[in-house]
Length: 430
Image: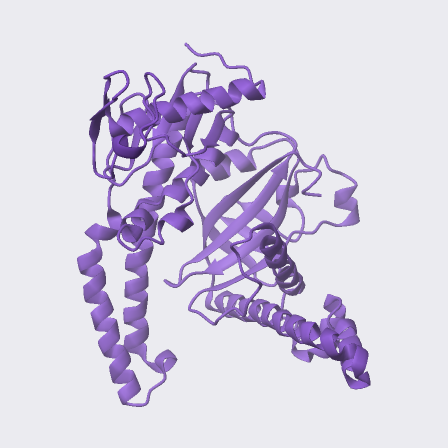
């Protein structure tokens, strides 16, 4: 199984389904959303019935029926006949139930999340399927699982999926070639099929193996602390400053123009009594607006991945602030700039990239990293507090002149190294 294998990786590729396959994807995505919403509704009803069941026989009978009717996938198929449609993937129903359970687990684990709620209908479609193997294939794990099972690679340009059949794909030639040339056993787990708001289709394939997918970078004997701020994207302890690209701000004029045009089409459709899904001009403009947003998101993602990979390649130990971005964006004055920077995305990418290439990445507590002198350790409080916007300051204790962001990056590095030392992790620096 996937859990029994040591190394896991996800592969995202672009897919080019036919019109028949697109119709099937939308149908299975609709079933996935329907099952999820039905479970939300049933759970809410059961919660209310449990309060009154001890006093009402009718409520007890209803509660017993709901538990028996929605206990398993087979029970749901008996209650809801259209789920037996041959074009519906069995695993789209099972994965909807699993996603619902994951939402409850996330709610119990993270206090700021809410209970599972109804999924609204949108212009994107997604569902998940699983790769299963026959008993003969399971008993022979030497055979590469990439070319067996109900989800399998046919060649570097095609995969086979349940219900959909043969579908053309396109992705990183280097990654796909390295994957298909593997001689060690590798299996496919879940596959997420998505059609986004722009009409593009993507496959997210989960892979697992007992041998690593990535080669560790050579040791450099260097450590770095990184401070993220609004004046620039990142300042590290080596003195390198990386400016914020501000992709959203650069595209604002184009976005506003496209949004105004979409609003006029919306008002025109409503005035003439047309449904938005039947208004072709509205749908064309909606897709153009979605493509602009998607382009901005892709630019930001590419920038973050390149910066993360560069930092990981050049340093053995990486330290950054564990920023609570969800709390920071509650300040409406800086929320837009923080969201455009993509700080949390960068931290996630940095940790993932460090893990796959054999580096150590630690997120430290950001408390007093800006207010502490990196030379003597004096913490500026009270009248000495460094206000927001002050870029340079002098330590009142030792008289050392500091550049705010560079000093914070050095403090982050020192805090991270101290944490590793206390944890007993060996540190070898040049």
